[in-house]
Length: 150
Image (tube, one colour):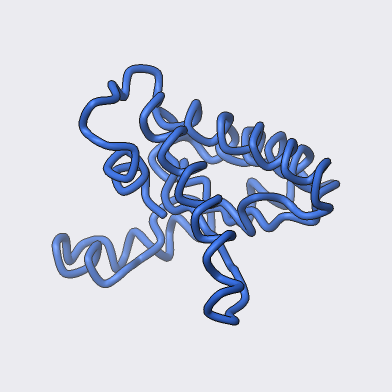
């Protein structure tokens, strides 16, 4: 679920100041999906996508709901979240994501991390120089991560 999709689910009548509509919409959508899935006889996997730095209040609100749902049901409301701090410095990205991972770990919730230039098709086709930069970025990320893990 995207931030924009979550706000859309909440409806146009709710302001998204402070991510209010995105938080409410994502939580409402997750509850709807969890309540209708048994009727269809399908498992539920709920993943949020590309939470950039400016959207971290959205993630905080969803994780509050995850925690409450976990206390009541033994599983988090969302199966996983994705933090996309790829536009931020690598050290900030790793430190911030580690804090969220520490919060999610007791619920056995997955946390996806996007870091640096990922080299997606849209990146390379839009800017051909990114092919070269991708390998430079990967080298820097590996060095940074190794230094922080030791």
